[in-house]
Length: 341
Ligand code: BDR
Ligand code: CA
Image (cartoon, rainbow, N blue to C red; front, side, top):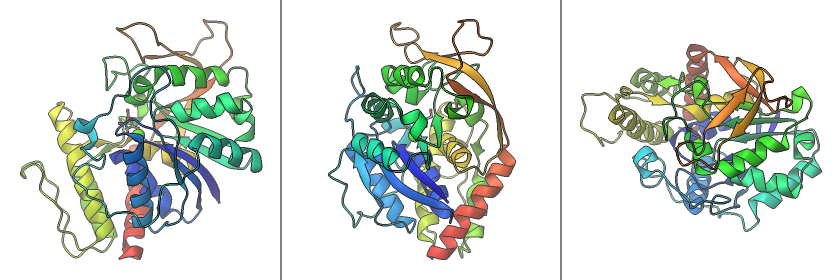
């Protein structure tokens, strides 16, 4: 079993990551918390709750922590993930309610109660995680593994020419988080899935078709570049219908930015790493974040050579294997969709 503390900003690729983890029989969702990013924190929490229920995981505690980044105003991105954060998908109203507990308190409490047992996965700006580290500086020792989706090193940013979205939304939080891991043992350092490798995770229309086939959907799921924008799925499989509607929006968004009719599913890759299923290689590095310069705000810098004379505080993923990852995604999420039908 992998017991997860998750922090998300659901989010189309967060949704895929959640569906993937929900599909794994080995996943225990200890708590899923919402950080504002793609959409505001209340919408993130609603999306997350609805999605977990849709994926056959009702009753998971979903909580909100910060409603704003640590030091700058919140920026959301409806053009990337749609007005509600799940592209064209309109998820059913969740039956459960968002927890009244504070997300940051929950992280600290769970980590203290189960030392060495919990895997932390953050696919959102690092605001809640930074606040949890302020409250419990020994979190890096208490957690079994930490995986972060964020940053961009030798790769063009996706928000500014040098900055990745999650880090750009809350650069001060990211700076604090990396500082908190300075001097930790190598196996305690966060595994950082940056754009350098997550943009290799290109989801294409044929993956959606295969997903529907694996789910046993009766009609082929055709999301095609020639179709009018905004077309909605008519799949008889509910989970496939929602994921297809979400992904169509993401394909169109990437095409608007000249990246082709495809979607970079960053957070799914980070989830597969956190679950211990997707293969990857990583290099130790000292990571820091620019917070001051207007030109470079949110830019992550990795020192792989010890030039700063500071010990490594991260393990930056340097290689991953998209074809195997998508085979795994299709089989796991397709299987879940088939079971739920
Ligand atoms: C990250 O930003 C968000 O928009 C995605 O959900 C992902 O976590 C990629 O830069
Ligand atoms: Ca995300």
